[in-house]
Figure 1: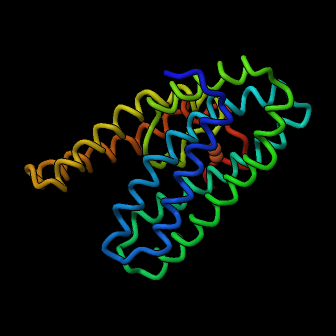
Figure 2 (figure 1 turned 60 degrees about the vertical axis):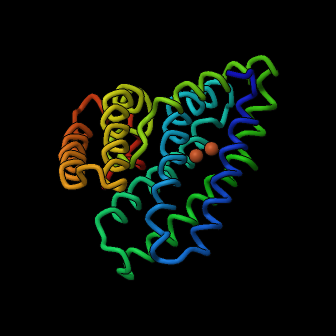
Length: 221
Ligand SMILES: [Fe+2]
Ligand SMILES: [Fe+2]
């Protein structure tokens, strides 16, 4: 793994997200679900690793780190809530379309807040070597983090970090099952196994340990 700074790694993902959001805005109905799935696979591990690795460092090194990180955690929570709602609504439902439009808005706001405010502040406080070390830590967590919406777990450690491993195993198994189903490999069995795992993940999210550390403004209402 190269020794890239956390800033470079963040901007790379943000640029990819920008491309996908553009494609989503120009897409036709039948392409929508595939694009949304690709956006979720990019956004959730990225954000989980921010919440578990980056924002705790910002709170330690910046005097106003609490307020700054809380704002992006609120955006992340809204993304989790919106995706959970989108997944429950049928394609073509006007409510679903409205939530997808709001999702695009919040994701763009989150990227702007990070690129214009948070990341430059972090860059001004840490050395190049520290930014590289942080980049590596963030990347390792990002590659092993959950890939789906989990609106009930804490957006802050320790709940965020303790829930990451079990939820990630479930999410990534579901990703493989869903891919099997869309390739036509025992589609019904794969789909129902994925749904059962989804129910298990929803139950796990409520384990009290996984909601610990939450700020009231980002807890599920
Ligand atoms: Fe980011
Ligand atoms: Fe973010």
